[in-house]
Image (cartoon, rainbow, N blue to C red; front, side, top):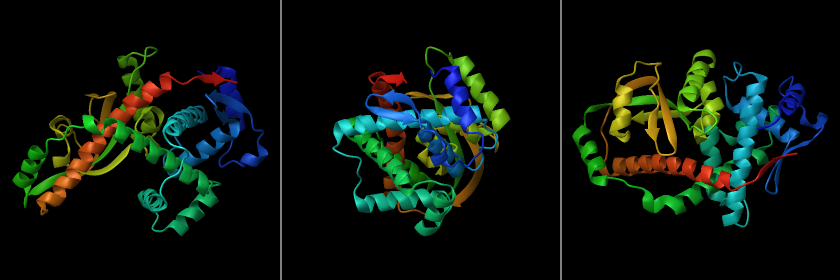
Length: 310
């Protein structure tokens, strides 16, 4: 934990947004193995998070500082582990272009040019943005190679579900998530009550920024539209109890707990190619399991790394 005086020092620096980082004295705050986090790093991360999230106005400067610092710590830990497995933070160029396109389209931009202008207008380096994508991509690659043999997919059951619902109307859910775990300093009840309070006062997306350990946290926990047949029975059962705008109680998953919010629903005609749809469902289920393994492995790596306050 950072000392309270350090928190107040940083908060005094971030009085207004966006900031001109070049006018701010750069101080080292943390050393994570051989990686460092500086005051300018925190300012840049605050700027990044507030730029890619629309509804951060209800989050206090103190909370934004904590979110940004935790985000940087997580990024540095991933980088350290990546460099234990790879020579550099580099992603194949064609794949990187696909990742970038996916990212800016998700944020509502139609082309790279307008997205770069948006980043530039908010004092965000495009190279820094690419580096964040590369770190996440290589981390996911490590998780895949380490845990691919532990992934369990019941293909026959998935195929059966698709065939049963073929040419019928099926439900699709617009979902958001908060994935959290509990450490020895805060028991489950206190953590859950804290999350519920922040959801009520600040909104679900801001609560996701504050508390979620999932990769979706920076986008307010958004999962997008998910068809009911791509959810396991436990999640389907929990969502069926919800009205639009409501949240589930915490659901136990590997590596922690999951809270889902139902943002909207729609019915679609399920006219699909069974084999094509099966591949999609296998990919979604694989990603869900890999995300859980990712959280478990990250906590393991974090325990092995020294984090020192300067």
